[in-house]
Length: 128
Image (cartoon, rainbow, N blue to C red):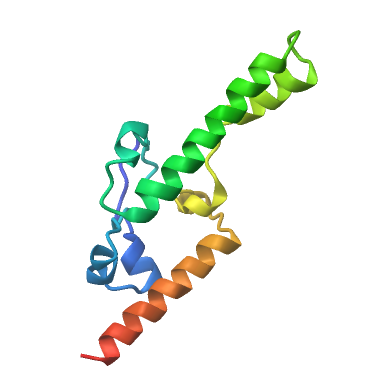
């Protein structure tokens, strides 16, 4: 496995103080290092972040409810319901996660969140 030379932090690349990320309860990951991420669904409900503990757990449950419903409806492999269930198991990384920086792919939602963080950081800096 190749060693990464001079990894770039999210905060450095986007010019956001790492303290602003920390204050928002966010991590400051390296952008040019692919890291395996696993979200433990058991911990979603226990998160101190109310968005995660309510919205994320609801979306997680809904996602798998659809999967189970489609499998119950399916009569044969490759029928419409089976294909819908298979789509629910698509584990490709969503573009808005921003962890694909090493491959240079960003999407709109992520960009808006970055602008919001930059604005919050600049507002915080100007009030000091």
